[in-house]
Each structure stands twice: as C-alpha cells, then as structure tokens.
Image 1 (cartoon, rainbow, N blue to C red):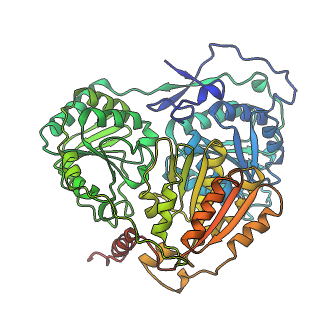
Image 2 (image 1 turned 120 degrees about the vertical axis):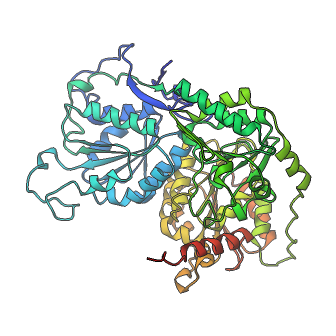
Image 3 (image 1 turned 90 degrees about the vertical axis):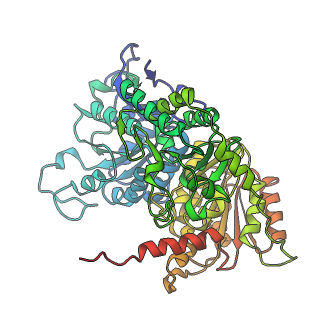
Length: 607
C-alpha cells in the first residue's frame, strides 16, 4: 500500500522517521483525492507558496535561512505558509548544519540561502549531510530568469557571465539538482527534487529564480496533490537466495556475532535488526557511528565495536568470532582505527541497505536490509555462545579516582556525572574530538537520542546541528559536548538558540586547543587563543531570552552547575564552561590518535 503524505501528523511515525516507509521509498503521484482550489492570481497560487506546502507535506515545519537579495521574495512566500516557521541563522554554514541536525530527528530538513555567496558557504554542510545519508533540501534564491543565457555579469558571482559555477559544485554533493527558471515545469522539478531526497536519503539542490517566486501560475491554483512514497520491495528470488546462503554460513558457526552500522538509519532497519538479535541470541554490538540506533538495554548488547578503542571486552568477542554479520557498516580510516581492525573477509557477512555479500562468495542485489533481517529472524538457529563468552569474561568498569576537594576537574570524573543526567527526555550531541570517545562510553537509557558526525568529521558541526536537532524535538533537552577549538568555528548561532527559546545544555570543554589533532600530530598550530567563553555567551545573550552561564574547575562546582541547570534553570539555555588540563584526554583518543597517525604517515608505495 502506498504511504500517502498529506499532513504533518500523518508524517510522524513513532520511531521518528518522517515521510519514509520503513524499507525505503520511490516517489509517485497519487491523484485519488481532489485538492482544494486556489484562485488563480491569488497570493497562494505562487511558486513560493507551492514549495512551502510541499515542504510541510514532506515533514518540514522549520526552515533554516540566511537572507540575501536573490531569496528575499522567496522567503516572503515561504513564511506566509502558516505551518512553516523560519529560523534565521547567523551564517549559511550553520544553517546547513542545523538542517543536518533537524533531518537526524525528523527524517528531512531544509535550508534557504542566496545565490553563490550563500550557496558556496553552505556547501560544506551539505557535503557532510551527503556523507551521513541525510535528506536535506537546500534551496537557493537564483538570478533573474531573464539573465540566463546572456552576457551579463551579476554580483555574488566570480565575475563571469556563466552562472553554473554553484550548480557544478552542488552536483558532487547532492543526488538531484533542479534549476527552476521558468514556471511551466517548476511544479514537476520541485516534486522530483523533494521525492528524490526522501527516496535516496541524500541532499538535493533547488535553485529558484528571484523573479518567479511570487508569480502565480495555473499549476499552483490547487493545493499540491499529495504525493506518495511507494514502498520498495526486495526481489523475492534474490531475498530467498541471500537468506539461504546466510543461514548456511551462520548455522555452522560456533560463536557468531552481529554488529550494527550507521546505514541502519538510511535502511530504516533498526527494528528488523533487533528482531534478528532477539531470535538469534547472538552477541550484539554497534559500530561507533551507529550508537543510538539500537537499544542498549537489549539483553545481548555488548557495547561499541571500534577495534582497539572498543568498549571493554567488545572487540575481544567480535574479533574472536568465527562469523560476524555487519549491518550497514562504513569501514573508513577513522572507524577502522587506522585500518587496524582484526577482521577477516572470509568470516564476514556484510548487509548493505539493498544488497548482501556473504564472505568471499556471492553478492545478492535487490535485497532490502529490513526484509532480509526479518526473514532471517524467522529461520535462524539460536546460538548464544558468543554472548555467554562475553558474560564469562566481563568485568565491570572501575570508577575513576575520586577528586580531592578543590582538585582540578578530570574529564573522566565529569562524564560520571553526565551519565546520571541521561533519560528518555534527553539527547546527546558529540562534537568531533575527544567528546567522540567520552560520549561513546555513556550508557544510553531507552529513548535517549545520540548523534555525532563521524564520516565527515567537520569541526564546528555540533553548534548548528544542536540548533536544528533541538528545534525538531523541543520536548527533549539536548546535551551538547563541544571542544573549545570546534566552538570557535561556529559559535555565533548560540544567538539563534536563544532567539528561539531553546533549553539546551552546552558543555564547553576548554583544554586550550585542538586535542584530537594533538594526538594525531602535534605542533604549535594546535594551540588556540583562549576566549572568555561564558563572557562571549553573556554578550550574545544581551538580556534577551533565557540564558545561564558558569565556569567550573572542580568537581564540586560541576555538581552544583548540573543541579542548577536541571532545576531552577531547566527552562533556560545553559552554557557550562568546563576548564580541564590540556593533556586530559581519554585513553581511547591516545590509542586511536597514534594508529590514525601511523595510517596517515605510510610512505609511498614503491614505483
């Protein structure tokens, strides 16, 4: 059955995925129900209002924008849509990061910028969303339609009459590009772009000429006919062959394990993966970028598999298994700890969103991950050996040494207190850096969100992403962990958080530099100018909105700050600057950094 997209409420399933069936989607047009008419020539029969209604249908209720002369009229018509809220950002990069964070929670996000100077500024964020398989709709106000094909030189360009520079840049980081400079096919191009973003779970680019956003056209005289996403289905013969080959491989293994990867999200297969864990009895781990995609309360959950920096006893169980099934993994230099994972291809079954590879044998295409795991769950032979081995060797982690009164605060002590803050009403955002490793060790309660950007790893991502994520789920309190170096890249949009009444708690880890870079390769360039971070946030606050800041240097001060942030200041944006020693890093970062440095430093192959 087609999943019709008609209203925002219909687009919000309980798992948080918006407008996308559980196993992927293909866009089609459904014209079974007549849409209400809009008088031709009215302010609602314009391209801008049509786009606004389409965004709302897709699940977007907030757009993140930076105004510029080419998009001003378009913005007028977008914000005229009652169900669409405009979030004005301080710069385009953060607007893109915010759309990224929003899409992680809602399933789709959107940003609006101006031509070239705005488009090229947001490009880095769109590339990050592409790498993380997030459907972000990037809308650009473009040149007047009369200027295309002329020899005119426009402002906001590089001084050439060719206006395609921006488009060519976006072609490499989006799955579809629509340049809308005439009204006749605008309806079709917009529908194709939005449905492709949802179907492919990748960003798309829509450029709209500045002189047509407010123009009525007969194709916009009706509300958009609700488009539907027809569920994709596996090739039944391919699915059966893949399942049989996998069962033959797994059922003769002595101690098989299963590991979830980040593409569980794009495949919308988390529930099916857990269904398979329930049926098989296998020890279940996740790769670091998949943290939060499966419940950590599952009785056979053994932690994060990250090679040499895995959570305790997890890598020993995974790497000693005689069969492992990976669901949606990405094996890059970071996730493989400098290509040092002790895995063997002949022991691995790798399940991608739409295909399955069994060890050194066959690859089966047109097999959807969710259907594959559901079918496996019905037929797999139960085997709890790997989990029993884990249970035998597991020793609970020791607690860090207690801080003496007024002793400088240690990061490991800090995260003992953070653990107590987590609940189903919170979400964790971890910035690139040592927060990756410290937050991986947090045990997430049921319903607690968790996000970080591992594939792209752009420092500063978390400020905009926190803005977008918090806007998407106002019922949750976001806890963001940001290093001082990263914060200096994108600090401005604390302003936007305050303007929109967000109640995030930001922990600014001040250790005087780019600590993750130090552990890969140290140098004077990794030392940054120290800021008065709480003073900066107070200045941004400027008495408007609810904001509370504090600095902590000792455990006693941290405890008091957390208490204040979660009680009397629970409705405020709270900014807690945590001052720690420059060499206070997790042991995992020390290990990971040395291995990544070794991978980076490999000499050229002999010619």
